[in-house]
Amino acid sequence: RAAQDDRSKPGYPVPDFGAAAAVLIHGDAAFAGEGIVAETLNFKKLPGYENGGTIHIIVNNRIGFTTESSDSRSTHYASDLAKGYEIPIVHVSADDPEACIAAVRMACEYRHKFHKDFLIDMIGYRRYGHNETDDPETTQPLLYQKQRNHPRVVSIYENVLKGKGLVTDEKLEQTKQEGLNRLQAALDEVKENDKQGKTGRLDASARLRSKEIKTAVPLDKLRSINANLLKWPEGFTV
Image (cartoon, rainbow, N blue to C red; front, side, top):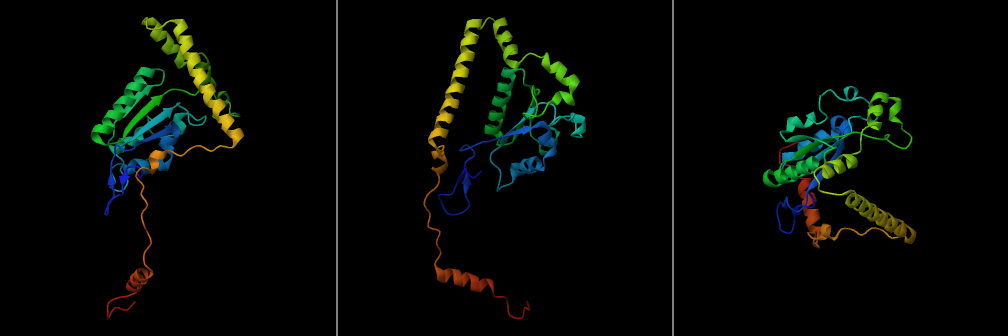
């Protein structure tokens, strides 16, 4: 919201909802269990906080830490909290990249037209543990037995594209390698910057709206304001 407000003129700031957009990424257990999620959803139409619609994405791996969903929330869907705020909720399979893209496009167009929140519940799974020391198979052996045999989304999508005759094995391999090369180049750049002690550049767009404003108030005026704050009507006993 701060990046949207035009404060160049006197009076209440005028928000431009197209100047910036908020995208929040949630875990499935966090969306249901963290109080700040409900607080943020409640900002949706408050005049001082509304931002033209936040796009919420639940990266739903169907397991909170290593807990069954039935032990971590009282609702059927992780997204059910949002039902109280009258916003669209779309459930989409993380194994279907084109469906995920369609959901995001729908969210963007809805925000643009109605200036309201939109929630995407992207349902997938977590292949590895919560962190380096966590082995989820200890508490979820049956689930992880299935996941070990479940093809990765890359493989699923490759087969879909090949089945439609849209790509060859050579093209797929080339595309993968190009992606890995971009990632490797970015990693090398970060490592090189670390060696040289460089800090990241601030985004210049954040400063576009800010202008130097004189905020100093004359001392006499401050004293006058303070004196009037300490006055009360005659006959009124403090």
